[in-house]
Image (cartoon, rainbow, N blue to C red; front, side, top):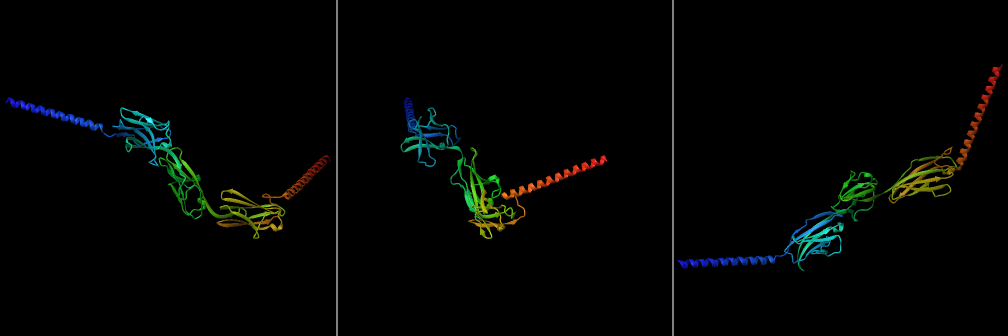
Length: 387
């Protein structure tokens, strides 16, 4: 009985030693496994939206990377193969005073700080743990910078078209957030599409008329800054239209007169004056003038000097451009007395002076006669009283 108990005790002791040995082996294996754990990135700052002039912090926390370099880099958003290495460990790799790097050893966190944010700071920032030249652990964070709208060069500038055509005005802009596009007309005039405001990149005008010509405003807005605006001038070509305010003029012989007409046209017209089907040229009796009064309006004045009998009759103001022509008739009649204004020569001044002088002499004689008559009446009255 004693022998059996000793053997059993020995057996249990041996088993306990074996279990302890196994536990020690397992702990050693776990430590070895932990020692060979690959580096990981446990945290990186989420997507950030910032404004120009602000300060931005980007943090990256790593594990099992004590013996590996940790790098902050910026990836070109238009060329992913172009990478700017900003920092390595706790040291900067670029000579830009706006960058700074902080390392918290307790949390294994590397914080990249960018001060005085600029537009160029927008993009993809990458935290890298370099395991070998061909192996890296990476994590990205997108940074967006609020940028006021800028209208793109591929937007419509100015346009020339003809009546009846269809056109489209295009406007594009970049910025962050993405700008919205709207269209207005100068003085808030109604748009051909209806209303005073149209939202969208492309404004289409069908069957355009000359009433649609003018300045259109492309407005880009994203609530950053004051927005952007581009003026788009739409020119509509149309044939001339001649207007005359006075189809009839009267003037006395030997005096001057101005015949006038106004032409609405684009492109600007060529204006001629004709009498009896013959084009008038500048001479001692005729002088032609042309004035541009507004963008699509041109006035012409035909001055007829020292009118003679052959100058009376019908005159035509004729306007032409590449799209057509138009004309209006003006008649000049002889009058007994000079008409001034619009225009008179020096003879009328002499005529006026003579007329005025004779009128004054007439009134002076009348007043003198009245005065003399009154004196005679007074003398007669006094003589009657004495008698």
